[in-house]
Length: 330
Image (tube, rainbow, N blue to C red; front, side, top):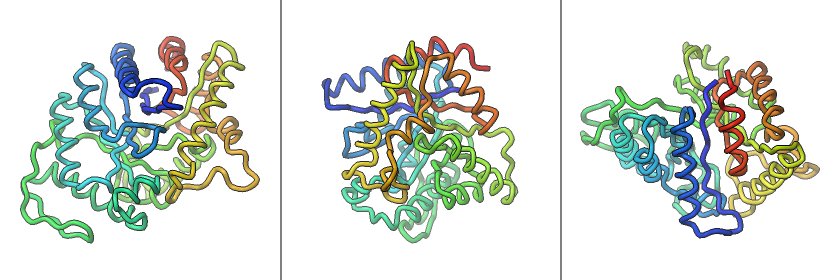
């Protein structure tokens, strides 16, 4: 089982100075490089203390400079908010500077506050995302790029640098809805699976993706399909449950709060639902290291969890994951 970390840059209650948020994350990334993690995947968000990393490519350069073997993933580049040629340049430059260690994850975004303030109509998010992905991949593989689409037009532009990995870095699409899963599968893209869906939903979505992938003539064998899971660990189950509850409340208040007003994402605060309990019951893996290890092995069988993309909900969780679980995973 491969293990990566989905690295958020949360700033809860602004309890520390902002520089400390980044310093702690980079120290953690150095630990990952030494201890056998496959990759760090850097989360991009804007206009919220939920995560204060607006440029995963800039932070990725710092991460690459402080590591030797760890792969540097974007989790994800929010493609509709970039000019696609600039996006192609930045990711390619990161690949060159990291010595060919980039995993490119791309997504369309979901936070309404981001669409509004970047001046991108939410109803155009999907079409802009699809065009951006096509342009980036062609910019990496074609000497001179010409493109005529709904949002962008180019005629014979040379995009430099080209990435070190050839023909281009490995690519994943963030996908959670059936339409996004179908689009990714029909184009042969591998997918990143989100941290907010329940374990059962992840299994269902993965089966749907594999069916659509086969229907489009693509094989699932040999693909890494990271499944992001929120994790809370403690020396006791009660300690872990408290970490999980605090993390769930932070998620609900920040990720799905009024400021974000998600675009195209099911509302976990629907009438009659307890969104925090939903996270505790079916989304967050929490307990002692031994109990969570058992859960991971069970999910490996039930939903095909061969690549755990862990989002630790505390520094203690990361330490226990590194010391107690990572060495024992098959």
